[in-house]
Structures are given as C-alpha cells and as structure tokens.
Length: 190
Figure 1 (cartoon, one colour):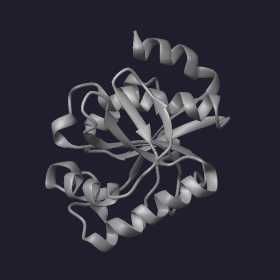
Figure 2: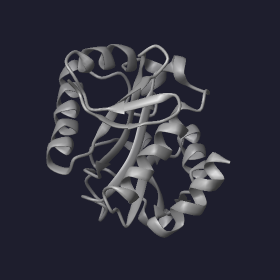
Figure 3: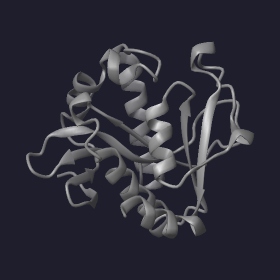
Figure 4: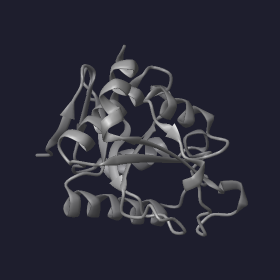
C-alpha cells in the first residue's frame, strides 16, 4: 500500500505505487506536456528520472509525489519536493518544488493546490529554510504559478545547465523563504 504524503480538498499526493510509472509515462509523455521539458522522452530517460525520484523519497522522505483526484482516483500528474540536481548551479541539494500535470488537468487550479500543500510540507514538516522552483524562459505558465505562490524571481541564481542546449537555457529560478510563506500562502488561497 502506498503512503499518502498529504491530502487537499480535491487531491491526494502520495508515494509512487505499483504501475504508477507506466501510467505516468503514458499520460505525461506528450508533445504538449513535455514542450518545456526537453520534448517527448524515450522510456530509458523516464526510467532514469523515476529512479532519481525514488532516491529522493528514500534519502529525504520527499519526492515529486503522484497527484490523484479524490473524486475518481484519476492520476493527474506529479507535484512535490525534491532536491535540486542540476549541474552548473550553487543550488544543488536545496529544496525544489515542482509539478507536471496531464493536459486534461490544466487550468483547474490543481497545480496550485498541490504546490501549496507541498510548500506547507517543505516548511512545516521538512524544515526548509527556503524553496526554489526552476523553469525556462518560455514556460510562462509555470512562472505565473510561481508568482501566484508568492515566489520571487531570482535572476541572480539563474544558470546554464550543461545537460541542455540553448533552447532550454538559461534555467530560470524563483524562490520563497520560510518566513515569507505564511503571508504568501494566505494570498495564494485567498
């Protein structure tokens, strides 16, 4: 049985279970979902990413958890906390919040709801001093959510990730401090 990390009004964020990796790969590995993430991936790339997610859960007690809709148990994507693993940055090892949802879940507030719950966990359960979120310039949708969460653009922390080509660089960084989260959370949910 998989353990639940947190529940919200509409969502369950839980550890990965049997068959989730296959279902996630099938639902998320589309041109639209992956357009700002390097494009559609081969299975070996996803399997390596999934192994890293499993390692975060094992080593730190958190990861990008499965997001399910409570009403019907539909797998909507993932959201949660991992540690920055990008090359070329001083942020390696720091708390990172992230999300990836299937197209049918876009525009319904699920990413924001899951991200708020994840940030609550970061600061309340895991004692993060701050949390970052990473994206690329063209991903205006994610940057919009980062702003709605009260995160601040940190151009001084932007970096070039050598794993990616020019279209995926630089990596854009947003962050929020633990002390800023209560007021930002109130604005985000209000």
